[in-house]
Amino acid sequence: GAGVSQSPSNKVTEKGKDVELRCDPISGHTALYWYRQRLGQGLEFLIYFQGNSAPDKSGLPSDRFSAERTGESVSTLTIQRTQQEDSAVYLCASSLVRGSGYTFGSGTRLTVV
Amino acid sequence: GESVGLHLPTLSVQEGDNSIINCAYSNSASDYFIWYKQESGKGPQFIIDIRSNMDKRQGQRVTVLLNKTVKHLSLQIAATQPGDSAVYFCAESDTGNQFYFGTGTSLTVIP
Image 1 (tube, rainbow over the protein chains, first blue to last red):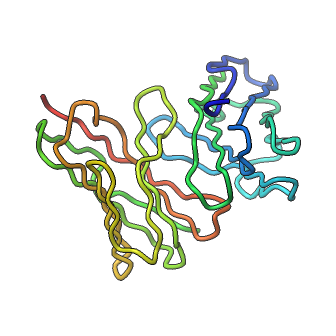
Image 2 (cartoon, rainbow over the protein chains, first blue to last red; image 1 turned 60 degrees about the vertical axis):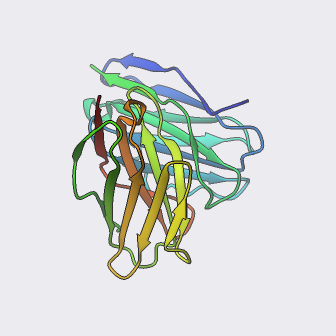
């Protein structure tokens, strides 16, 4: 696609429910990143995928968070047993190669009530 | 871990004036820096980047300056326009695996 596409754009869920967020990177981009942005704050790194290499999961805040990516295509970020502190915008970005500038999607705004 | 901080959380400038947004970083091993612009409700948008082997890079109306001695980065916007109103983030990386972002500076352009 022409840009990084994320879905849904908005998600409201009840505390304790699981949610799945989707990211479609730019075609051909080998690197894919997930970030979390709380209201009025900077971006917090969550996880990084590079091709078929093992992902860098060092930013995942707890074992309730997981992400998958098949090859160089779609990625899903799953949050299990959501908590109110999970409320944030979840941003996905992709880049052609590691270390080059990212292209971000518009994010998924998650609200846990 | 690294810390990236911005000196001014908010900045207001008159339309047509030049804007300077500053950023300090703490990781001396960081070798790649990017400035992003984020408008309300949108994801960050790449503006300009610079690698540590350079101290200045210019784009269209924007210039990034890097001072590795004091670990300082700045973004200069010439002839600031209302469309430049946004939050600006600097980001640093030493591995390319991830970038560390500051909290951002909110730029408001006064018509």
